[in-house]
Image 1 (cartoon, one colour):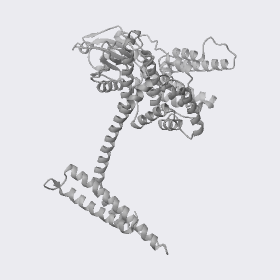
Image 2 (tube, rainbow, N blue to C red):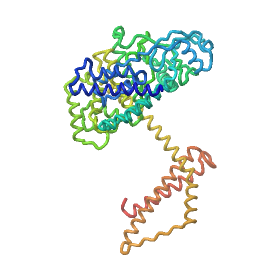
Image 3 (tube, rainbow, N blue to C red):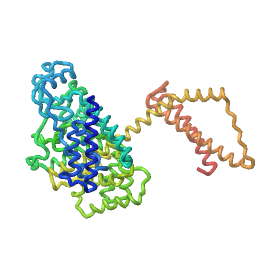
Image 4 (cartoon, one colour):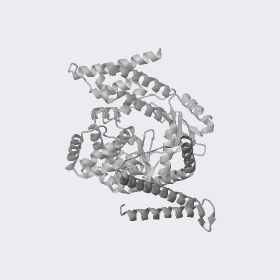
Length: 530
């Protein structure tokens, strides 16, 4: 029965909003609030799941107008804290010990309460001050139920309004649901926190309060207590230029070197400590970028700065901002208009985040799905740019990014080369080890089944001979290459008997490979053709 009541509640709220929106669009209703504000009020009345859904929708700058994005970003988790007794019970069940054994002190009143979790201050027995993040009881089941009900209602809505299919609302809801469930798993957040803490260990400009080893589970996370002044506090602007530079360099390190970045740098998650370091909080939203995406992002940045619309279009396609069968002339014209809008501005007023979104919106309504990691990247760029300009309005963000990008891209390329060499060595070693078995199986098939091939071309004897010679040379070249690789691996790992410092098998392999190389060179020289 509770499921039916919830279904009716959701259905009534959704269809009431759609009816109101339609009346407003037809000028049959004069509203006292904007459609975006009305949407936020509807979402907040539906509770936790829909507040998080609205926050997830705020990532989709490629689909929603700026008015809706701003309204959805302003959604707040207005949720009363759950009782201290419930909090203690959840901690003890998750960590398997009484509160008294886990903490020397545990504050009953929560430091903060939100829709997914609430946070309590505590002190460990070794004296360290910590915060304890506790997931709300039964929140996962509530999210799962609400999302299933919403999905069913969307199916009905798509039957009534089939033109909505081009925006793929079901796929968007599934994406938000999957990421919301990730956000409720504090083990993932703990691992990300530890990863960032290790990456910035010893940094003079960045501090990451690490998760406490052994004190985190799916529903509870214990983390070092750290704080300071918010990044938008006017008191920190005396050192705004240095802090802005430090923040940009921290994100360049995350994006281009680590390939993983803090995705929610709003002022409530960035603090300036007394030491002057920037403290990053809340790793519930983390974006990832593989090596090819990082290279494509660098290309997009350079193409944007150099005002090269053709290069910018290629980079946008490679990134996934644009996809499918595109009219290149149409999109190139759109990119040229974006570039021209910035051409008359000083570089410090250019916005990579805004350009990113405007390019993404060129594909609006063309069944182009922006990958989730790029949506998180767009959100991060907007928030990071706002934080930087709040610290120092005159800071030249783009120039700073360009000045540092070449160095970090070079280092990431080096790491990729090492990985490639490691893979080549692994595949070559595996190939050498498996070659005898593969040859044995091949010979067995020949013996069992036989091979009969007869092809005759009368009057084409010379062509046949040329093809045969070329085929033999290719085969011999492949065998020679295999011998060089095998001999190198035998030499590197010192496999087999040795004569002094020389492995005999490796020496034999090199000798045979050199002999075949000489045969190939002599044959090509005699024919006079490469």
